[in-house]
Length: 266
Image (tube, rainbow, N blue to C red):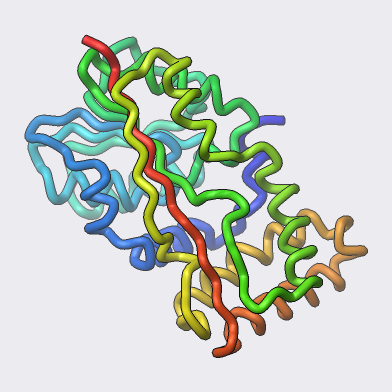
């Protein structure tokens, strides 16, 4: 199965969803994770709508930024936004992050946000990240933890439905494997930061923006996995129930976000 086939959340408005989601995630949070030094050459691996690479290029005009995504429609969207912003230090290319079209030791930092858990071959991606990183450079992988959400109060049907989506979309994701996988790719000085995920954590009812993001994430996944729900009508019923649960002021959702960093030896 290819990377684009594995990404079951995609739909026609996905780039706009990613742009809105970036505001929930927090631009300053993302910049703090990357912390680019002057003159940094950065690869945004799995760049999607391009919001992160665009942000770095805008804030740090002396940095050279490249975004890569396997979906040519996303690349076209990202490049159009970059061109409209007049960002001459930013470009996008179409390609696979498990077979990067770059020479060895090309980038000072390689950043990947919420991408690895969709990939059939995560090891290949991390090996490629390490290959294209310069000695002394850094690879940064940022991702929600599995099982993604701890919900209260427990609703068995909600738990089972979300489990179907989780198992169908991310069947092989355990972020605690990342440090060992980075070491196996030849990286050292491994750092792990665990923080509250702002997209899927709330005390009481989710915000309107969280609810919209939730529906736009869950709907295409449930649609593509409708056989597991007993048909498309049942899948849509689950999405409606899910959103109603999240909108209930007596419910709670807790999700952690991992940022794992590894440095390439000099």
